[in-house]
Image (cartoon, rainbow, N blue to C red; front, side, top):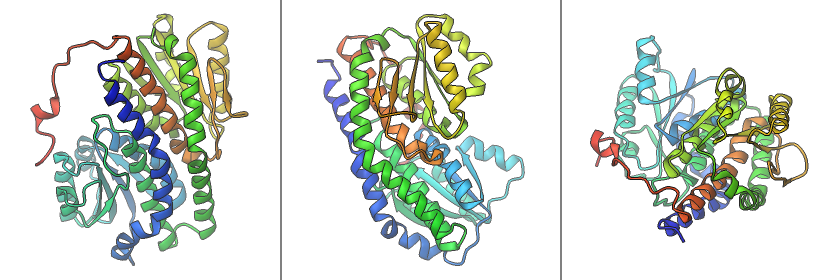
Length: 369
């Protein structure tokens, strides 16, 4: 037992809750979005801004490809600093739908931007786990993230719930406004239902795969996660989690970006690569990269949608709806298991005994009371 074993077990429990949380969001989506849809009835938005910091920002990146494709609208993902940059570039948000996410509802920078955008005429959805929070109070309409309590500094089920709720809000608006056809809406929801139905099986596969490999993974001192462009939000999130929990340098790259320099890290035997292989985009390219690196005895691992569900030493094949726009909902929970099993191993064997410099959020007053 490691010194943080109880805490890590709690976090893994939150990952397990991804299954009922996702099912609940899909089942309750009409009720959850009813007040929002009532408030935006007759409104025409010319763009959507998904806004947040850290994991909430990553959730926006996960959902951007889906909403852009389904609604045929520009979807921008921004943090507070990026919003300031957009303003310098002359961006206008007076006719925009802003979905601002903060699980606590107390992110000071997010609330400041919400106030400013409301004054400029934007319609602001405050997506939060606390409907009595400052973010909810400042919003045009507050919507519950719908994941329940999460007592952890390492956000897990809240990330997928945030992404799912961003998706549901956008899709329900698209259907109600006529931007998304009933047929298109039904196809997306059927694929989401498939993902929710098979999520537990994928979690179980991931646990078994990790059990077979985690000792080998513990020898690496950095990880690069690579994917197609639509999955960069997912890999960014997991790279962040590995750094937060195991304190290992981790980064995220789109596959072409990875090939132009970062792959040279593999010349250091303590560096490894983990790739997300989606059948929808860059599948052939990612498969060839993995095969080449295996031939060269480089430490390469993959989570793939291609083939029968199961695993070998270096490859995990998951159950998949094979809808690339929804890949985040399949890959994210599996990657969360991977990062937490790594964390658990490091904790149990005393490999993470580092002295932390303290919580920078306190030094910078990033939360309002």
